Length: 357
Ligand code: ADP
Ligand code: TRP
Image (cartoon, rainbow, N blue to C red; front, side):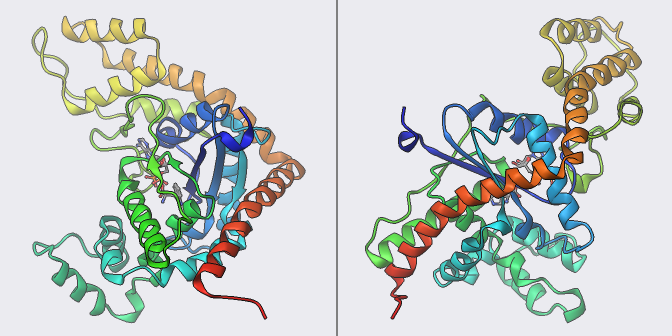
């Protein structure tokens, strides 16, 4: 199949810290799996990181570590375009243009905006969660605890990442589906306003089977950076074992074939992701006949996780040490990403009536 025929896949991860097992199983591993069959574009969303983590001493380090983690986990610059968002200035210009067709109301109603805005203001979800009440919270906020406009227009920027490459398949987690829906809406709106067929409508891309939600080690919920319950790809064996051994459990099955509580179900989910079916069965059987020892389960889990993360961690460290290689990967990625971005932007400017003398 020629390069042109392949469908365009695009996804990114925000540069807000090291990647954890949730990012690996929920995103990165799937990126690696599709590299041969699609026109793949994977980037590091550093501009998006600025909406919540504007720390100039950390940003570049975060970009570098995600880049090294992408490469160590198997993203191949020979097969995929790997780039840094801010290396493609066309994105920033298109963000300005697309914003002219985006409503502040629809942005304010986005679930992730409500969530992050309340975090920025230091308030929880109030009893009155209506749009009107939320609007008052935002408008009434004092200027020292403000909700920045970049957070509001986060979905515009994400839509631009996708539309500027004319990507049609976007692998994302469940929490990003609303942003993807907005992207489709913006694409349709632009096309119909100007009577053109510039942007294809992207869809979610769930390739590697059922979507996974990797749980944390704290008994409930998902593994996430802001949850503080992560196992990182970069964790050293000693620290990793310690984290796993401290995972929340319960008092153990009290009778044969007891139902499994959430903390234990979470450990089994992690075991299923990292172990062989035989090992999983052995522990499930032990749970069913009450002979299970959680200490053994955790030891097994830690070793099985390490079997996956150790080679990746070692490569991360090697790759991070090779600045020349890192620079050459993103330089080449930016050149490729900019080529298509510049073409789309030029069409868009023309359509909107921005012409050169
Ligand atoms: P975090 O929640 O740690 O801040 P991000 O929101 O930056 O992680 O997620 C980046 C990618 O990793 C997204 O595609 C997201 O769906 C995926 N992801 C993050 N946490 C998990 C998880 N616990 N299980 C499955 N996928 C996850
Ligand atoms: N918003 C995504 C997240 O938080 C990251 C992202 C930015 C993205 N732009 C994108 C994902 C474009 C897919 C496509 O996970």
